[in-house]
Length: 640
Image 1 (cartoon, rainbow, N blue to C red):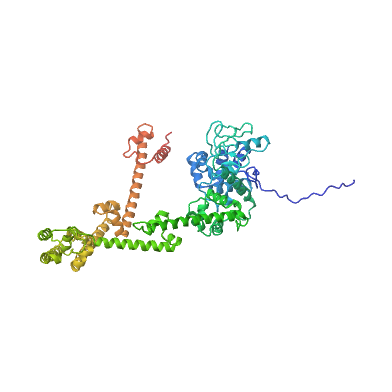
Image 2 (cartoon, rainbow, N blue to C red):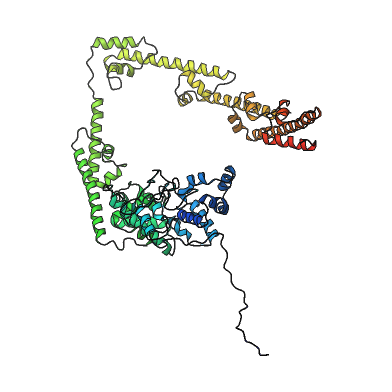
């Protein structure tokens, strides 16, 4: 029999690629400005598997994310947590935060695709601020949806439409729609029944053809800027997959510092003013304290004629600036020169004002926070203003000292001095001169009426000596008081506003009063400590608050003075409370079992209401524990 030859068989084992849990759909528009958003990719993924987005999250994505807040929400809503979850975090899925990272990680594990990161803004998370970045509701271009449907392309929602700064479609140059044309509602970015291109409430088609659209002739004043912003952000999204490394936070600081130095001569305030931003923002960005918002970056790039991608990625974003850079430098010089010219004019006008204003007043007029800025504007004018103000103040002071005293009749002055000799308390000569309208020490009264003035001074000296003796007797009496008062209270009694005067006049007595009060406080503390230690020996230890109230003390004050003893009191009270609670629970459990057996012996079915009606403390145990004990006792007694 002739042998037949057969082809050679390769018996080596085949390499089987790993299986995916979900269909590894290819994202749409990768590498273009209209790359698909991650929420749109999730909706298409659910549509391919013929399930809703809510079921996809509940059964696949949620367990894969495996976060504590998801587990709690899953238990709280009996497995249907999508509504609240999408409401609170739906706008974060396409952004730069943890929610976007969690969703990307989960979908990559389920589909084994490694390019889903570009469906979010995670590539730019170090250079973009999360504040005001993403929309909370959907926005779309009806013409884009209509064209894709007519061309037979798959319907999806681009990542570009998810940005809050994008309000214009760069292809059709028209405003994006934000309300359903049928029900008029604003739609969340993702919901349980979301479908790309359709309203999740009424399922209406959101697209329209050019013939169905009504052209809107009214446009916003900043339409050109918003159109430019949409185009730049589209370039930014398209550049994401081509980057070799993600830009860091230092790129922002470096780019802003370079623009400030080259275009505004290092003046950050002028740079901010050119970009129509608050003047102190540039300093924070250069010092890397904060990251600019996306709108601020767009304003800077638009004013400086720089591409947003170049600003965030290149080492030298001004390398291709050319003629526009010269125009910006000239405008910056005009801003600086105009401001300094105005400041010099105001300073020159101040030199002719009467009365002469202070340099602080001029700085406030110009809006400067510090007078150092005026010195930089013109050192000569600054010094002239300061000197003129100093001379004016000195002249006014001298005029006040030489103030004309209204003429007094000699007999009138004598009567005033004689009346002062009988007034209590004794007045000083300066007080009498002040009442008569004299501004100097005694107004020359001592020369005109020497005898009366000497009598006034002698009477005042005797009054002070008498008061000193009375205060000394009062202080010695204080030393014998029990309990000894604090020095502050003694000062108030004697009419002193502060203790320094009393301590200067009576240093030894003041020191004795202080020492007595300190010793008294020390004795009080020792007695309180002994009382608190006695609390530790009680059979039923009270709480720290009740112990403090028992001794008429504040709880916080006692805790600060005796932290160790207070800690022991709290621990002992907590242990006693726990043991009491355990004893009460055991008593309630025993009572439930006893009442269940008694009712069964009486021929009555031991229901929960019936058992509770006979308990001494029916509401001590919660429903779950009460029911568990009752069921266990019923099983033990074989009660159905």
